[in-house]
View 1 (tube, rainbow, N blue to C red):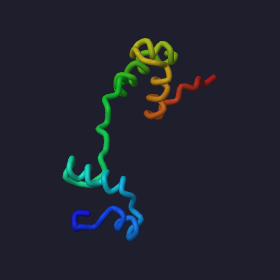
View 2 (view 1 turned 90 degrees about the horizontal axis):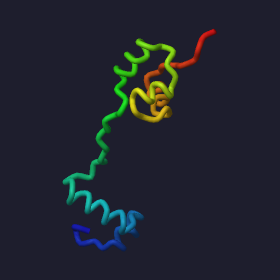
View 3 (view 1 turned 45 degrees about the vertical axis):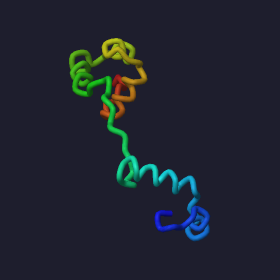
View 4 (view 1 turned 90 degrees about the vertical axis):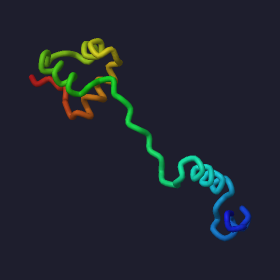
Length: 92
């Protein structure tokens, strides 16, 4: 389009829809580049080191107890344990 081509001509030549061209143009104006934009990683509520220390202090702590200690849901504790590859199975 910058070289005088219409949206219809772009579609016929490259099968690129006008909405995509407009979105790309907007991205180029805002960011100066068409590189993909990535989110910054968010701060996690449960610090992995603190969780490991809590488990060392009390290895038989249940998920609800840990959730109360970290002020979060037990699913959050479960997910964090999985990401740290820590299993909670009891050995008999």
